[in-house]
Amino acid sequence: MTFDLAIVGAGPAGMAAATLAAEFGLDVIVIDEQDAPGGQIYRAVERVAPGSLFGASYLAGQSLASAFRASGARYRPRSTVWHIDPGGAVSFLADGRSETVEARRILLATGALERPVPIPGWTMPGVMTAGAAQILLKTADLLPVGRAVLAGQGPLLYLVAAQLCRAGAPPAAILETAPPANYRAAARQLGAAWAGRDAVAKGLGWLRELRRAGVPIRRGVRSLRAVGRERVEGVAWEGGELAADLLLLHDGVIPNTQITRALGLAHDWHAAQCCWRPSVDQWGNTTLATVAVAGDGGGIAGAEAAVLSGRLAALTAATMRGKIDAAERDRCAAPLHAALAHERAGRPFLDALCRPAPEMLAPPDAVTVCRCEEVTAGAVRRAARLGAQGPNQAKAFTRCGMGPCQGRLCGPLVASLIAEVHGVPVSDIEPYRPRAPYKPITLGALAGFAPHPDPLPAGGEREEPARSVGG
Amino acid sequence: MFRRRPEPGAATVAVVVEGRDVRVPDGASAAAAVLLAGLAAIRDTPVGGAPRAPYCLMGVCFDCLAEIDGIPNRQSCMVTVAPGMRIARQRGRRAVDAE
Picture 1 (tube, rainbow over the protein chains, first blue to last red):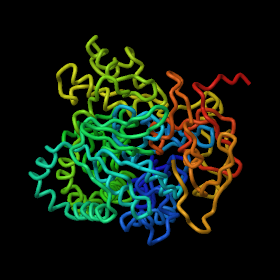
Picture 2 (cartoon, rainbow over the protein chains, first blue to last red):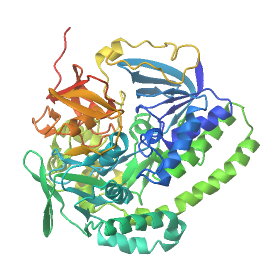
Picture 3 (cartoon, each protein chain N blue to C red):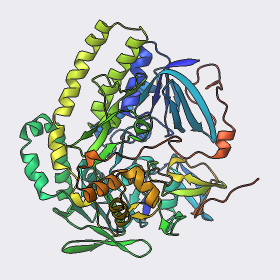
Picture 4 (tube, chains in turn cyan, orange):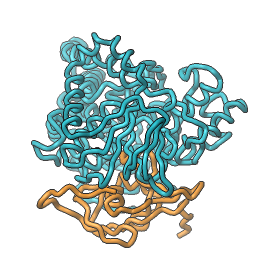
């Protein structure tokens, strides 16, 4: 069969789009890497009891997930999309086997990833992202042992710190790397701060929690580095140091553009958020007629905005299949567009407050920027001086971006370093051009690839009951 | 490095991490099992032989590559634990399996 809509990602945008599209009578399939719906922001949301330490905005994900489960949309968890043909074939790896489904329209709801935090020592065991610590707490009830230090900036850093306090494991310290200029720039965005006052109030609430828990917060930290031999033993910065058993880094999130780039979609440089995002119109349409984007993958705006943009993409898909006419679409879309504008109105304040420090975009020479191939910032700068015009050429010089993560982490760094050497804005530098397979796939999985298998057994199961290992 | 939050009655799964028996919460990832086991590292890089441990926990960084139930180079953060699962350190590249 051919699906009306194939959605990649079961986070807030994917779940909301699938639910509404199914309501309009579209045949929908959702393909997601995790074993349960929710994406990163609502990880394990179905398993968390009410009154947990995660708060009301996290628990809001439960109604999204249950509506999605009940929607009738086909759901393939534990499935990694490795190729998309814009003609409508989506290939994915599940249980060690590759499968392909056909779809008239494809919605990419692949969300965001944490911006790399390239400091000396960030590859050592004991250094993780703040998001990783939160995922461990949400999915496995794990808490750090010993002295955990959180460093960097952005709302998630403070949210994770507050959640660790609630769980009885307050961090030893928070080291904020936001340059002081950020506070001045944010102060010029008071209109946006007022529009985003709910988010601002939430942030102030976390700061109060941290103060009550006695967590020291040091601001204006520069030249941050992880210290240790085989694993992290401490953290140091200009004018200070602390012993640490775990260092949790965070410097905001950026759109995950791996698939949108591989498909060759047009992208815009978002100067305020310091990242690329696929160019989309108000319906999530991209420069490819069959491919749409919703959620943070199209620009960072948060989970509530992701839900709204997912619903707008569903309206478009329903209109294209003739389930509703343009007038009905516009009637349904009006409140969504209004709510989306409201959600986005506060962003300029957050974007100004959380702009990464220059040293986090183009770190010192000795720092490893490509964690996979162990390529330093110095090696990338050398390649640029030897003539590499962009990350795609720097690959040939240094192998940066050629490891298993395929440039997901080092991409923004390599581009910034090359821009610095050539004295041009980073928006002038063409980023990595990723190619399929979007994630490594073994020859064995490819060999077992049936080009057009029946994607699911008859009967419309939303999820295969048995889980097998290997293949 | 990590401990389980005391949750009375929480279901757990028994897995083996580098030969050690570890009980991990049901639904956790193999990477969480590695961290709970207190392993110093889960892989050595193919390039420099440097020790690495899980970093991003969301399938981006590939620093949690491990040998799971005999299959090398799996992203342990993307694999949910199952009873008896065997998780072992990934040492450098995976060898070509000519079987």
